[in-house]
Amino acid sequence: MPVHATPPLLPVQWSSAYVSYWSPMRPEDQVTSGYCWFDYARNICRIDGLFNPWPEKEKGYRLWMSELGDAGRGQSRKRKVAYAREGTAAGEQLLETVLDDELSSFPELFLPQAILRDGGALHNGRHTVLGQAADAWVVERPGASSVFYLQAGGNRLLRMVTGNDPQHQSVRDFPNFCTGDIADSIFSR
Image (cartoon, rainbow, N blue to C red; front, top):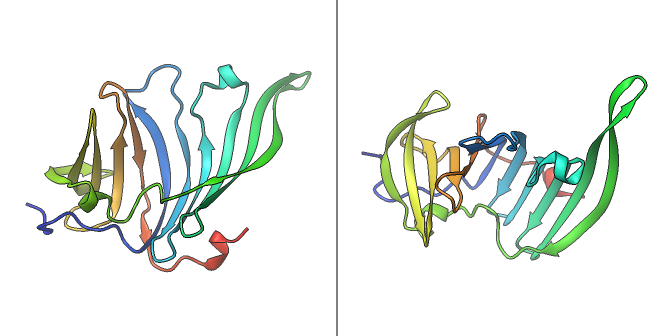
């Protein structure tokens, strides 16, 4: 049984690299990665990395994006760079194109600090994730469920499994979860 009688809150400030993939992996699926920062006291987050919600063959490029989501101001800013392959006499080259910034509304953080409590998460046993003992917390939603694997007895996120299709779920691993102060410069533009 977990140390927590109720699901824990995520740490007030945390950051981690992430690896994003699908389970099971289909031939067209991509493995992507990046880094994220969450500061719940300031109601702000930033996620930098490769984002490929489409096959590279379909769009002709892979997308790097930095999104700064400021729920306190209700605004998100995305900076994007497209990387496309081009055949040359010297071989295949990767060419970058800076895309226009995108501003949009941002009412809440992607991953709220109280997601487990607010979602009525139930403990679903102890597992091994990224070589560590982990408590699984399941949040049920209409037609789907999400599973959050936290370091056993604690609140450090190791893995998140989400998606509406139980036969093809999105997995995000957080292999170097860190807590503590995040420099102001991370959230400045």
